[in-house]
Image (cartoon, rainbow, N blue to C red; front, side, top):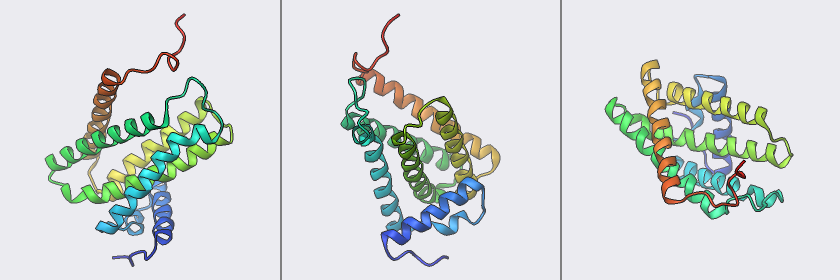
Length: 193
């Protein structure tokens, strides 16, 4: 087992190498993460920071016009969708008798969320918005999810497919629930044609 990071900075740097390894498909990726309770707590701190950064980035960048959702609502939505995704992930891993991969999945996924959110926020602050950026980020997120299931949780191809489909179904159900209980404000919706 690799030496446990001693500070949050050590953990951050090791996790950055781990996320890069996940993106590139390097089988050594699990060795960069701390799967202990301390490592899980550190990954949740990173996830919460990424969520707050994502919610407040429009305010920081001066792009919070009348069509933007309030940061509090964005944070609540992200946390709710995260809880649904984690719940569906746990259900699938339980069905596959692979709950041993749950904590490693959470740690790696939380750190990946942190770094991908930081990178996409930086791209947004630089003014590089558009369909191409959305497509590139979407592809990277898909690669990260597949490689996390493959390298960190060590699922087989069929299990990876089940795992990803369960997460998609969970997030879709979460979005339906959110749209039912918290409909979009009129100033955020596109104008009727």
